[in-house]
Length: 78
Image 1: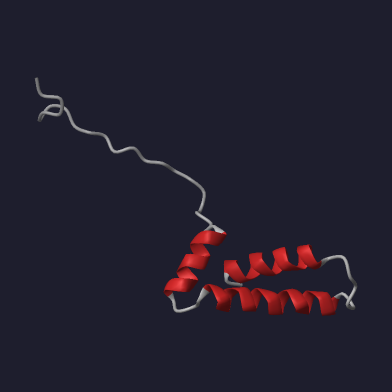
Image 2: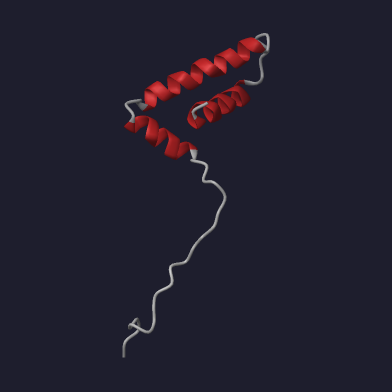
């Protein structure tokens, strides 16, 4: 019994999805492949997070939010 003979053909399923946004992990791996080390990426995130802190007038209590915002921005490549 032929499952996929000449009269039958396999149908390739088409998955239509929204534009793929790379995850932070994918972006970090890409950065690492482009020569950035994990430490380079961490340092860039730290610098940007500190800039957010300074822009707010050095107001304490937002360190986690600053770090996460900087991480998103750096890993997104913007």
